[in-house]
Length: 456
Image (tube, rainbow, N blue to C red):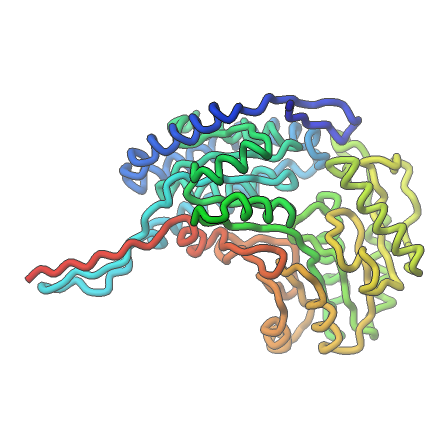
């Protein structure tokens, strides 16, 4: 079975790759395992420097990143790829590595040495998504390598060239080829490798169904599986919020990357006193967007990454309209009924509609009025997902009180759709489980090892 990337720009075949056979895949995993011990034995600073060297290699080829992303998943070239976020996260994880990976010394006396050290898992398997294909992959690759693991990357078919670009950069920087491998695998071979304990830790970012498949494959192997799955992230605008800032931040969070963001805003609740003004300004904001070819520098919103993704968003919108929802954005000229999709704002929506329950992962947002914090909290928690939630208010104390009651991995105040590498990236409910970035990211990519030495 050939793995194919269909460009959303024009529906043409952009790249094809042949997946490894079962024997070839098993050999790749065996080579990673054989190389890992020597890699882990290298000084920590040497591993850090090699990872930072890979970042420098990617920086030299930012134009390649930007152009290939436009062709593979439709992000407009005006945004310059993902290097800014990639750099911020990689440098932070490099900076905190020594402290995060240092042993916790309980006692160091003439009688005893007692400490808890961090041991790399061994071989880490990274299954990366297409929507932010550099950053999401490297969120695990960089700290896993720094911690002393070998890494095998399987990238999404939609962004198959990203894995190759990352591998080229790491190898050019001096990371041994068996220590970091980019592989092309089909689903059956992936499941077989996990079931056969080819890996010591699996990090998966993708759909709920995909996460379930990973956990099923790992069942009984005791292999750790970390997952970041679906989201339906809400925003809440309190009566005391800065209206202009709330509109700009939430609508950018809903529409950037054609709405294809893990922590993108998919539903907004606005205090009834600000509701009409918020909707008016939100609609005006979206009408300023230019839908078009991502290779055009004037384009602010490109096509969705695949026609089938756009079809799901259209279906949710059409179902909502049939159930009484109101649309506010007229069909844009570039909307071709395929991957190019008009961004949409919906009002008169309810939680009976799929567009307010199911993950949309596209440029559509529903907006509802609420009478108070209690109603907002109830609606924000009325979801099977829990990745992020955003509160807009001038009252930090009120935001703290609301945040404690929200079922989510991250709570923002007066911002949205951002991943801070100093904070743990995590979720709950059907968003999955795990801990990425921050010091906790290093804890997830290592195991504790206790030393209890009696000296006398």
